[in-house]
Image (tube, rainbow, N blue to C red):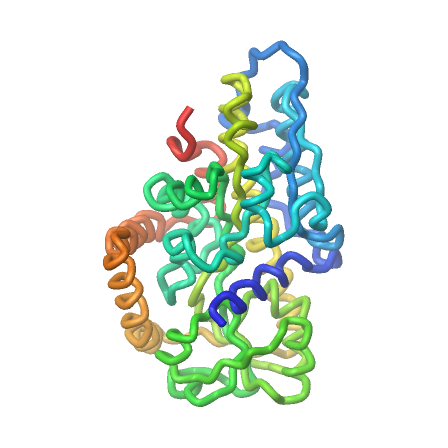
Length: 383
């Protein structure tokens, strides 16, 4: 059940329609893609033969994610004087969506998506932002926080799979769309909810009943009145047209699903030093680009769709939101206890996450984007 909720959010985001591909541009990102940000340009001295590696991903051509990757890989090629290039293999043609870790560790692909959501065990720390209210509401902040936490908490989990950690880009935060307005915790209790990214423990804490609905059937379940509400992201609400039946949207930002990448160690270690540095920093530049285009810019489109379709946007008062967070606290406490029993630093992770959330709380998305492009986190891969 837990795995299903995570997978449907990931899969929905993987098939976002190209009709939403024309995103609002962020000047900072456009400048980077146009090589107008000197701080992000690598210094390349390698004069040998060009090196081409393989990048694999499951998204089909109709997804809005591959065009962003294509732009970033084009940037990398240009920035390295065409010395480091990647051939892209999409739609699962080289490595399937479930086999990212196996495919990359075996060298079938040199680099690719490695969804921790498809792994039942072994990624308890990397999946921590699936806990209620541990994440922020900003995809860029969540992505930067994960990069800063990666060396300590996520790299060991990836290393056990025989790969290097690339990045985990956060794909938005989960809100509620519902048949009736959700303005308090009591309004949610007893409802039948399709809850993407939510664990059964969280559903129990909030008092709603989860519906096990395969994602292709979500639209009809909503349309036919089988579900009372859906907890998901813009990336699910919009392509599945939840707004046609549910006219209330409550902003909650409960959990934050991720799209993870990993790197074959031999492929990375075999690069010349300056290309290693360029490719290492490229991970973080790409994470920022995907978060900006697929989440931040897409949200602006989503708001317009909600407005056009008469959806009421509800923001909970601070006092009410505190009640939701108090209801969720036992779920987080149980997770900490389980991690500590397993010898994992669950409490330290939550403390570190809260510290970084406070550190970046006042920063805008534009400021976060600039930070990620100009000041990559060091030490995630040792070289």
